[in-house]
Image (cartoon, rainbow, N blue to C red; front, side):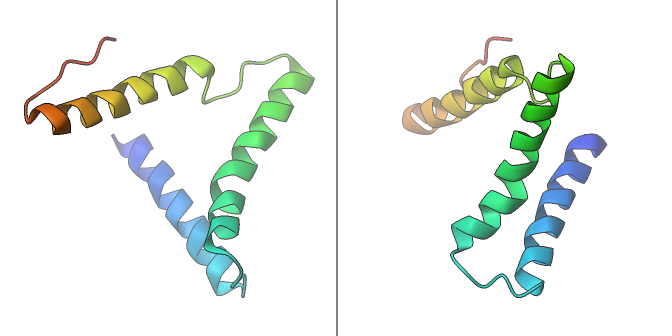
Length: 84
């Protein structure tokens, strides 16, 4: 949990830094620079080095399964299991 919390803190910090540095353009640009750019950099590094970047496709698939379960739980008004 601590690792995930630090990741979220880093993202929030990056977004706030971009805003404080005068990047007052489109908010999606700020978010894209803070969230997407580092992931693309890791992906390209993984392609260059032959290493599987993190997060991996499997990580994304698990995250999507959780998001789908949250949506289904909201629709049902009940708990929904997430397959591992």
